[in-house]
Length: 456
Ligand code: ACO
Image (cartoon, rainbow, N blue to C red):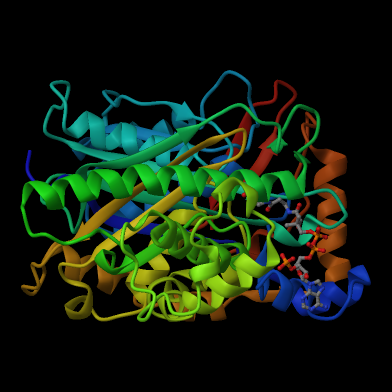
């Protein structure tokens, strides 16, 4: 199959949020810590009416309905999530309820888990299936969904929740660039969920930042070498750099880390380039020419110099992709794909046609990849690209239609989730009328832990 990639995208985020500036006051931290220091404005969260299964039901049904698909057109369904509600039964099997009326039970794929990387693993599985001898000509769908919540303390403000569904197949609007993937995986305890009775992770915040940046360095260096090899084969004599990428999306635990990541990539380019232009784009950076990357994760001088040197890159190539990250927070697995959606919603299709978009996916523990998509150049009316861009044109309106709850209200929802986590039987207390129309929600958990859902 030709031009395999993402054909359509759909996102779901909760209908309620807490304001980060109000949360600063409520938590008693210094003014600006969450909004400026971390770069976050609002954080979406779910009542006890929603769980990861309801989020995924909602986003899958939206994808199918809004693209006029039928469930028998899907031959593979992958779910990436780190929100555990069952140690055996996959979220994917719960989604099979939506396929019942079509009679289609021939759907490969189950769940895949490793912190925020699961969505990327699900997408790679879907892409690989379409490119493989197992493919039967139908679409694949990859879903990333999570409820990201932290215990009270300094990590709580970096939560979020949501789900993204991606329709995968040939003749895509976002084509995956074959052979250009950098991957870095290693064993580290930076963020993990060993306590199965709790929704909360155990986090070593500072270590997680170092691991994220180290993974970024390693993935980008591999990607860069592969992209350079392609350029060398084409004998165009150019040197690969960030100038060869038009938009850069990142997994976003919080927006400030993404800004620092762009600076980090600029640092990589500078250190790796054989003949950097010290009087042009690298003016004033000579002193950093020979440093070792591993020594610089928390080096303030390096950070400051490369934040300044990459500010234009950040403003033009990355910031447009941070809208959802800033407005909803870290959704975990969907975070990176919320970034892609934000970028796509930021410009008319004609300005994005043919552009290369890089994506960096990081999941603690850790697993990470850096890869790229090429936006289709088919701008004919009704083309997949036009349909995709049209389908997300109302993203800002949807964000604006949410309801703000106060920090004490948010806190009491968190306490209720804590208290009732894994209770059976259980009748959720949250008001379903507060959800957006078309949202699946939990109606009941029976004495055998079986969950039942309805749709608003
Ligand atoms: N005005 C402006 N900036 C401020 C203010 C203020 N009043 N107060 C603090 N800041 C700045 C700090 O200087 C710091 O900036 P820096 O990052 O440039 O040093 C930033 O705000 C954050 O402040 P810290 O004191 O470093 O924050 P703290 O250590 O309390 O918590 C952390 C931050 C570690 C990110 C925490 O929220 C956390 O553990 N989150 C979860 C883990 C995480 O997201 N890790 C990232 C990768 S792994 C993953 O995706 C889950």
